[in-house]
Length: 227
Ligand code: DX5
Ligand code: ZN
View (cartoon, rainbow, N blue to C red):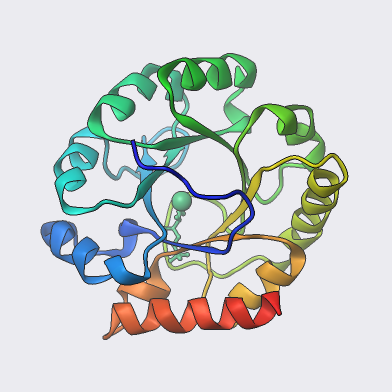
């Protein structure tokens, strides 16, 4: 198990969805110095209209990275796979609130010793996740509709990020607020100012000629916004 680190710390989480799947280990090693968490996007072709990777790939990547593996399960039935992810080397799993059964999923993840995140799509209201804030480690507020990398950041989600951060601080809950989708040097500061502290970045790292330099510059932009 890799420790997540203190809640609320600024973190860059490169999403390997945008990397070359034929050379994943190399991609992961290349950006390691700027990786706080490694974000692994799992798509089941049902919850989202796309298919990506699963536990075998997590297992294969594990020897190449000592970072926290932040697995984002875009799946209709994540409960069926939590154990497989844990056994493959996942450190945290994030499930979507839209699939239901949230209480049981949180309990199952905890029983396995996983850090647990809860995700909400851009059009899912804050009220859906609010009842679970005391039971989770991470709140993932999607800034695109999940399923594909390279989409544009939906700024309207910042109202929800602000609301979440305000409630979490009010209740002194050590929950990370993660944003995912369309994050780059321009949008990272916007998300950080709204209260996000974990930045998932796919295309703006891996589609650049210098992925490590891109990650560094996004971190710099986010740090400046923290003041
Ligand atoms: C979207 C995924 C994201 C995606 C982000 O369904 O959850 O993690 O990889 O990619 P970019 O940064 O390209 O928007
Ligand atoms: Zn993701």
